[in-house]
Amino acid sequence: MPKMIGQGSVYQDKRNGKWVAQFRIINDNGTKSKKSFSCKSKEEAYSKLAEQRYEMDNSKTIQDVGLSLVDLIKLMREDKFNANIIGEAQYHKLDYDIKRIEKYGLGNKNIQDITYKDIQNFLNFLNDNYSASIRDHTYQLIEKNMDLAYKRKFIDDNPCDLVIKPRSKKSAKVIESLTVDEQQKLSSYLMSVSLEKEPLKNVFLIQMYMGLRISEALSLKKSDFDLDKNILHINKTMTTDKYGYTIIGDKTKNEAGIRDLPIPDFLLPYIKEQLPKADKNDYNLLFYKNHPLNHCGANAIFKRICSNLNIFKPDLATHVLRHTYGTRCIEAGMPPVVLQRLMGHKDIKVTLNTYTSVLNKFKEDEIDKVSQYYAKNNLIMKTENQKESLLLNNEDKILRFPDIER
Picture (cartoon, rainbow, N blue to C red):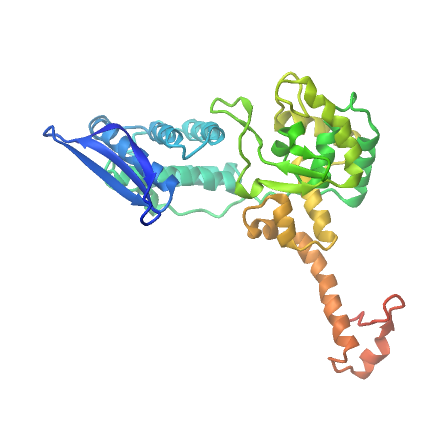
C-alpha cells in the first residue's frame, strides 16, 4: 500500500479558481510520485486530503485486524479537526454521540461485523428514547462513517443502505415565546433590580430586546459597542474547546451571524451601566465571574428568575428571550427577510419555519386588508345579505366584511 510523504498541501488554481489537494507518495516499489485532486471548495480539498491520509495510514491495519465503529468515528474526527473541517466545539460535541453509541453496545463492534439489523435496532432504540433531531444526527454520523469505510474498502458493503428510518414517536420541540404580559413582568423586574443582586440582568435584557443568542451575548466586549452611532457589532460567540472548557470563539455560528444591530434607546442606560464591568477582567468581557460564563450557568439563573415571577414554559431556557424578540418583530409587522438579517439566520427558511405559528396568526390580518381593499374599490359583488352586514369603520372609513371566512 502506498504511503503519503508529509501532510500534503491545499492551494487554489488561479486558472480556474478551483481548489487542489496535492500530496506526494512513496509506492510499494520505492518510487515516488505526486497525486492531486481538483475540488470545488477549500473545505472539500482539505477533506479529500484527510481522507487520503487516513486511508494510506490505516488501510492495511484495518483489513488485517479490524476496527470498531467508535474508533472509526474518532479517527475520522481527528483527521477532520487537523484539516480544519470541524472546530473545537464540534470536536467536543461528538463526544456525546460517541458515548451514546458506546452505551448501546454498537460502538465496540467491529465495522466488518456490523449488519443492517444491528443499525436498524439501534435506530429504533434512538427513536423510542430520544428526540427526532438526536436520532437523525446520530444516525447520520454512523451512516457517513460507514459509507467512507465502504468507499475505502474497509468493508464489503454499507449496511446502512438497507436501514429503514422510523417515524418519530416524540413531538417536535417547540420553543414558546413569552406572552406580552410575561414579557412586561420580566422586563419590569430586570429594569428595576440592582446589578449587584442580578449580575446577568443586562444579558437577558439584551437578548430579549435585540435577539442575540446567549453565546453571542456572553461574549460581548466593550469594543463591540459603538455608542456614537448606537450600533452593536456581533462578530463572535462563547464556545468550548475540544475538551469542553468554555472559551471565547473567534467567529459566529455562521457567516450570517456577523452583523451590526441598532441599539434601542431605552436599552442604552443598561448597557452604559454594564460597560465598566469590562475593565475589571483581562478578557474585557461585559459579563464575567472569575472565568468566561457559559450558557448552562445563564440558563440556571434565568430559570430561577422566571420561577420567582411565576413564569413557566416547557424546556425553559434563555433562548426563549431570542424567540420572544423575533415574535414581537413579526407581530409588529416586520418583514421576515429583515428579521432574518437581525437574527443572523443563514437561510430565510430558518426564519419562516421558526415563526410559522406567528406568521399564520397574523396572516388573518393581511387577508382582512385585502378584503378591505376589494370592498373599497368595488371589486366584489355584494349580495343583499352582505350589504346588510357592512359596517363602517370610523377610523379609516374603509368598509369591512365581518362575516367573510378567514
